[in-house]
Length: 182
Image (tube, rainbow, N blue to C red; front, side, top):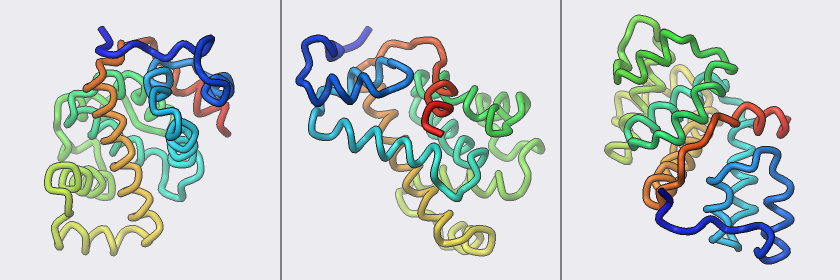
């Protein structure tokens, strides 16, 4: 059960009402975000660009997001992003390995394992190790590395918002949302 009430679009300020009306999937996370009126539009815009405009392949982004969901205990994030990850090319075997915390499983190729290790280090230690970062530089462009860091940071923030405010779990709608952004 949510620890704060959800913002009701019917009684929200006009700018919030307009922003929420423009979202294709009326997810509870957005109604919780709406308490931060001055941040809502920018948060949604940043999330949208992470999901649809990055050069980093979506499959790798979703590996990182699902790993963050597991590390953070953010069930809502997990439920919404499993179908997005599968639409981006993740297999059921990979999703099951992530769910079990097996980031070194054979179902992941070397680049995928590197992204998972990098994500773990950024989440747990803030700064990726020199060895992992050097390997990232060999495998990814500077743009892709920075995009991955931004995606990690954004979804860490979302996980903390979800878990701290207790946003109620709801059926998956993430793929609807992403399809509408494209």
